[in-house]
Image (cartoon, rainbow, N blue to C red; front, side):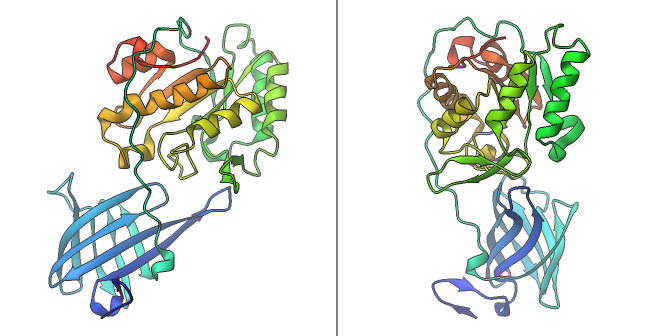
Length: 316
């Protein structure tokens, strides 16, 4: 059966809104997995959503068993499972176990509005970032456990070990620093970083530079708020904090844009950084190719375009 304006309930079989809560992020948001299914006989259609991705699915049901497929991988089930005692029990992409309970429309995750990428512009080479900026990034060692004190400790170690004097001058905070956006849309840091400006001042006092992390999609790789639709706003925030470097990770943007939009989408953030009047170094991360490059020339290398394609303010 169904009620309201197309809201399907599990009483009709597999149709309905199915929810599995996830972990609570450091900014207080709770991750969740939501599957919205419609059923017409044995045919199933629906959308699988989380805070950082969404996938359109089609498939079939045989009794209480089901198989759902994504358009980009029609030969391999994206999600398979069974309806057991009013719950969906299954595997996402053959490896992630899911136990989802019946939810309501209030549990659904809003669809992200599409923002057209800007036209690709030819920007003269600004002569910056002629060599890759060198330094330290928090992810490989600390991942989501990075915090203010750890960054200060690493800055001290960069100096005492001689790394700074050898040219390794960047101390870069990777993902999970993000808080939530305020009523004006300004992104705050979470409780692990109580004062980003004070942290930047400390790093600068050591003769080092501070880097930060975001992405062009609505969410970062770890599920935190990213810069989609807030490029200029975020660039101004980071500039006010005294940030010198940005790592910009494609991640959830691949769920919105095709790969050929990568260049203009990244250029949009480059222009926002340049508009702050500061001199930035930048790095791009492509989740598709897992290749890393830094600065205007390095962005060109990852995206297969001449260096002048990218408006990337920066300094080595």
